[in-house]
Structure formats: C-alpha cells, structure tokens
Image: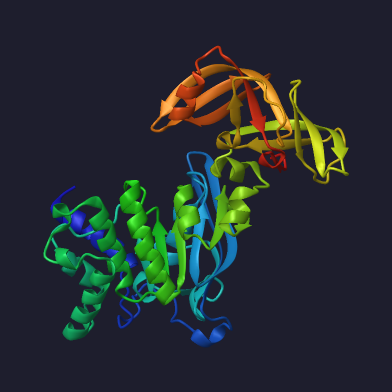
Length: 406
C-alpha cells in the first residue's frame, strides 16, 4: 500500500479511536443526539441486528445487553461476530435495526433515524493492529484526538496518561523504534487520553509475551479502578478473562449464549461451546445409568463404551443422555493401581502417545475411550511414562462437568 493510502487508512481507524466532542455532526448523520429521550445513565445499552450474506453463507448478529461500569469480557470462537459487534457500537458498521445508547445519549436508532458519526460517539477503540501513525512520535500519536483542546490542557492530559502507562520516556520515539508492548501501551493511552465514556478492546494483548501482557493488564486494571467506565474486551485468552473480567458474555453464531461472571461461565459451563472455549479437552456423550440421591451423585456411562463415571447429581432421568466435560489438567495419572482415595473415578488405561508443548506434556490415554491428560515434565520423568505403558486415570466427581447436548 502507498504511504498516503496507509496514512488515510490509519486516519479512518483513528476516527474510531479518538473522541472529538466539539466536532459538529458529520453530514451523513441522520439526526442529532437526544439525551432526554432515554432514562438510563452510566451504562451502555445495545439491542441490534446486523445481517451479512456472502458466497451463499448468511450470518446474522442479533444481540441485546446492558453494560455498566467495569470490564466485560466478550468471548467466543472465530467468526462468532465479536469484531462486528464492536464495530456496530463504535459506528464503523451500521446495524440493520435496533438501538445503541450510552449514558442516556442515543447513538443509533433505526426507527427514529438517528445515527451519530464515529467522532461524536465518545468511544475509545483499540484495534488488533493498533493503527498507530508510523510518521508521528509517541506523544503526537497520543495527542491525535485532542486537536481541539487548548495546547496547555493537551500537554497536561498527555503527560498524565503517558505517566499512567509508564511510557513518558518514549514521547519523542516513533512506533517503529519501540517494542510491541510499548506500542500497545501507546495505543491504550491514545484511546484513553480523550476520556471516553466507553472503551472497546479487540484482542489488544494477543501478540505479547506473558510477562509484558501481565504488566499491561495491571496498568489497565488500575486505570479502570480509577475511572470506572464500561469496557468491552475481546479475548481468547483464559488468563486475561480471569485477570481482568468482572462479567463475561459468550458469543456464538451471532448470539449471546452465556452471561455471568468469568467464574460462573468458565468453571461450570452448561453449553458445549463454552466448555470447549473454557478448556475442557475431554467432552463425551454419556448415558445416565443410575442416580444416587443419598450421595449427591450419578453414575454415567460414556456412550458406546464400557467406561463409567461418577458425576455430580443433576436433574436427569435414568437412560437420558448428557454431555460430560473433563479438563485434561484435572486428571491424575498413576502407574500402580491406587487405593484409599477420595476420588470416585479410577479408570485403567494405556498411554497412546506423549507430546511436549512448552512446559506441559500432553498424554493421550486409551481407557475404552481416548482421553487427553496434561502433566508436568517432572511427572513424566519421575513416573517414567512412555507410549504403551499401563496407567490409571484418577478423576474427582466434581471434575466431571455436565452439560446440555447441542
């Protein structure tokens, strides 16, 4: 792409990142904002639908939710509609129908023909590719959205945000001269210096190493604690979910399928899609064989196999089929048959394969059905594990999570 074209693209994205409250409504706006027309305050209210048709494939985003101050994680598989949702809120994509309002201001209302421009929405947006201007230094990138602010005030605000994100010493550097983590801090500072009423973050830390990511998470958490605005944060990373999230929305095929705290959604998923995203590597159909109400458990047999599991008791009739999910990290391995355990599930099997992933060893064990087990390098070596070795899988009752079938 030519240099001028690249700058034009970055400027277009910057309209979504920057907030210029004094700018007059753009000519394509359908109507001005009407603050008195809604009764809610300090929250983002969205009820919208957007349909796409391409190559014979139809996709419809159809969501309704309210967000109050704090960080809400938007979680879901690729193609679920997460970025489309953020773009609709920011004004980069126009919904087919619905309403969007923030702090009592209507940003979009199809029926009333209201559609505020990107610049008038007062929304901060950090994209995956950051969209920093390569020809501007760090300070000028951060101050881009403060063009209509008095010079002294502009300097005061940029100084404060640069210090908050620990990049004051980089003010004269250009994006190409600083690290990926530092560029990420610049992008966050640029989105926040304009004092947005809502912040949208589209996988902002995906490309960073863990130590750098954790430091930025600490800074973002501190900023949020002080300012308390609605923040919608897209991520696929479970560490970020639990480190930052106060609430979690799970999106699948354009619809919200789960809503709750990260702990509620991720540790006790009731839907298979959520279970897969939450890191349940082993998911099977299971038939209810017996209910043990006095013990608060059920006996389930993995469909088509002779493997039986004791699971927590749920409302299900004998003979009905459920889905059982077990995290690979919740399964213990033994090389001799254990006894005297509180765990109710001890299953014999044989190691099929071992593969090292960074500091984790992934074992696949055939026990009538193939299960994935995660081990430390030390456990593999001390147990002298290798393919073909007989082992026992140990699974606690409450490590078996029951879900509705899709």
